[in-house]
Image (cartoon, helix red, strand yellow):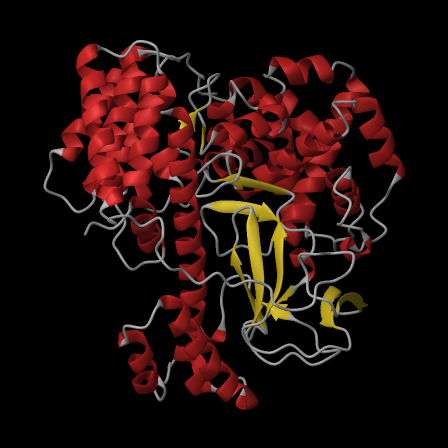
Length: 556
């Protein structure tokens, strides 16, 4: 049985499978870094300033802003879409283990270029349906058949082919050959919830520490290994551009088999009409049509401007009102646990206001210089969008935009707790309280637009809860011992369901917890962490299959 594309991509990113050329590490120096280096080389000692507005004027006076080779954002083109579709067909004809994921990328890119309702768009969905059938993903295949039929210019031959695909899928599903009901570890939060924060366990509190700043602590509660402490939704999340053909631009989930293109540009895709509509009413309004320019500049700093426009959307595009709030509320400190998450009306705006007031330490001059330069170039890119131009007409408003691009880039660089996720950059208001340790007490899994905080050891009251932002002792220990490998292999090789294996690993973790950090525990913890992340991927796949089947049944 062929492995679904989403799982294959996750295995490649984790290092289990070799990367295909398209997924190789990007060059060490990004376009933004290269432009910054060129900028500094022309200034000499004058380039040592870290003042935002000095750097802004230097960029303008040096002519760099006018000389940036901005890529064009081309219009839809059926001719280009047909070329990419043919390339996908060529890849499918190869006898190569990577042919499916590479072909689906080309088919998805073809859909991005295709004009709405055209036959080439229908052919793109039909081609993707065939890949799904080869992978025995019949729910996704049905959804692609439905999307193809939705296009107005399907030829009789294509309609007949789609009918054949639909019949085969329904027969296979009726025979029980479906992954939609595959078992997976649900990892629910079984603890008593916080009365004001339903998605977080009761007994967690934020405190301020002179060394660490904000910290998350158990407050009069004891938590055990495997306890799900929280499942939080991100306030803002964005994909790395190299994942734009496999990830939804709104929910950022990897759903390559069910993506639909933005009707207004060739840069992004969505896993559903719902996500397309939400992003169309939110941040993508400010990016549709300048996506290639933003992709050209992309670094992890890009989430700062995205947060700014998220805030502007929550202020109903009222620049004056947002500016009044931002300039009158300094970063005096904020506690997201003080918000009432039961009342969803206006909650996102309150979360944004809370984020705006979080304190962060000063970065060094070199980092501030880089952040300021990034803010200047991102402002140049966004001001090429007609909507942004119409909202930011006056000089004071444009300075406001620049100043808070810079501020939010710094804040989110400090608050990012998902450095290990190379595909998606997300901001979680509550999880961001947790500080890093290479000997973590808990782990944050997921990291797209939702994440779970899961205890790795017994957490006593008033002991700070540390997580890892990337490195940890049980993966990076120089001489990993193998004392527990024999016991672990019994679990790994068993035919028990994945959820049962996770429970057994959890018991091992709890057994060795008394000696934490125990060198011999490293292999168990590493495998347990892999199991938690695998459970997150499997859960997403099963839910996506069910959603695809439900949508297909409504459309067909």
